[in-house]
Every structure is written in C-alpha cells, then in structure tokens.
Image 1 (cartoon, rainbow, N blue to C red):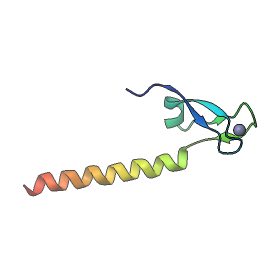
Image 2 (tube, rainbow, N blue to C red; image 1 turned 180 degrees about the vertical axis):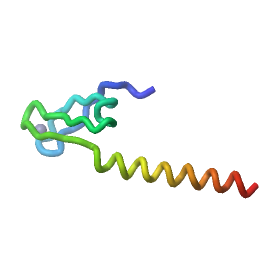
Image 3 (cartoon, rainbow, N blue to C red; image 1 turned 45 degrees about the vertical axis):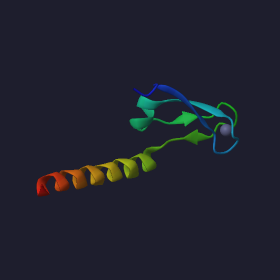
Image 4 (cartoon, rainbow, N blue to C red; image 1 turned 90 degrees about the horizontal axis):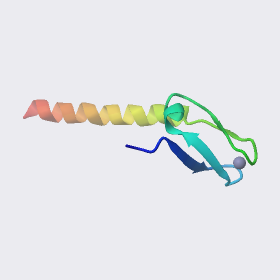
Length: 66
Ligand SMILES: [Zn+2]
C-alpha cells in the first residue's frame, strides 16, 4: 500500500507540499504553504489511467491469442 499522506516538491518555490493521495486521485487540489501555489494532478492522472488501460488491454489481447 502507498502511504496516504505524502509530500511533493512545490514546482514554483521548491518548498514541500503535503498531499493526500486519495484526495489527489479524486481530483483534489493542494496549496503550497510557502508560496500559495495550487497544485492538482488531474490532467496527468487521466493520461496515466489511459496508459495503464491500454497496457491492460494489450495483456488481455496477448492472453486471448494463446
Ligand atoms: Zn511553493
């Protein structure tokens, strides 16, 4: 299991932003305590999900061929 509470470096000030993985996956946003930048991973998450779904489909196709 991945720890729910993690920290990520702020892209703007390189400070530390505490994030909750569950909230992040659900489209939550997190604010940097240092510079008030708001970070969210929604767009990247969709890409990651799309990619893993494609891989999953590949595996299924391979299995069906055997
Ligand atoms: Zn910051």
